[in-house]
Length: 459
Image (cartoon, rainbow, N blue to C red):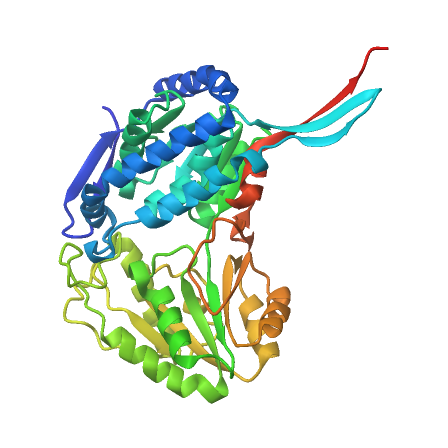
């Protein structure tokens, strides 16, 4: 019997989509086809590859009205927010813009005796394993530069957003990218691991859980396959005494709650200096009490269900444990909270780092707010984490923010903003958040390998 993957809609628990997985033999054929066409694709000029990718991006844009509703059914984001096309296009466009520079030869010398140059060459076939929370934007982070760099791409999207890969394949193929250069596939975990272990790919990029990242590394052990990993996060915000309080509250609480808290760089813990603490908490509670939890297909809904009931139950467990250990929950249970995927957003105070809600990834609409006395205490608490993706600092003093940023173990330091990915900067993390870097010129470096030429000229 053929195994199938099912997307269970968080809206009503129905099966929204179902697709059969490839067998190991079928998956091997996919990789073989990708490998066969890669050299011809890489031989095309960079500008041509970039133009085709951007045409594919435009084709996604033309589908956006359908995509917005489709995403609501697949992972619960309210339709009022209009999908992901803005960020999707921004990231691809930036990578297309810098492609010539990012992939340019590094000329070392060309004299009477020698020509010496370092070229950047594609890995070959790149496997992209993409997550469900921002299924278009996270996927394009690697797909666009990988294709522009001359790789062929095999996309394995998350089961929760399984239709995204099909949409992207349809768009890119309609734009003129050869079908075997970009393929969307449905694979189970075992087949994925077997392909990696068989050296099927020149590079693997995975965005997902820490456990998933460990599985990728185990599969690749001994193959010397390059792996890029963006895993968990527990991103902090720190509000200093000179911060714009209203801006800090509005932005950090939005960063904690938007997309039902299911953001890679969402804010999961907030540290506020003593003088602003009470006012910050009061304003934060007022904002969250103003949210409307409900069906994401309703334009009035501001907070949809979590993508799956089991994700919501994990958040409930963290909240319950924290309250039992002495934390205070400030938000009364919403009437729309069904005990399943529809979850009341929560603000906790009286939290400590002994609580899971302040240490483990929540990936849901909950945030702990803790009072601190100074920068030293805030830095120590921000660093007291197994994760390091982003940190958000709130102050009018740029030098102070940079100094504190230097002391934080994180991939990105924000000042007076959060929960944003600038494609001109490297998207990277440290500790259990993973390794590698996407987007920016460094993204091209990670999706290619250096190749040196030392050419002695004939006399």
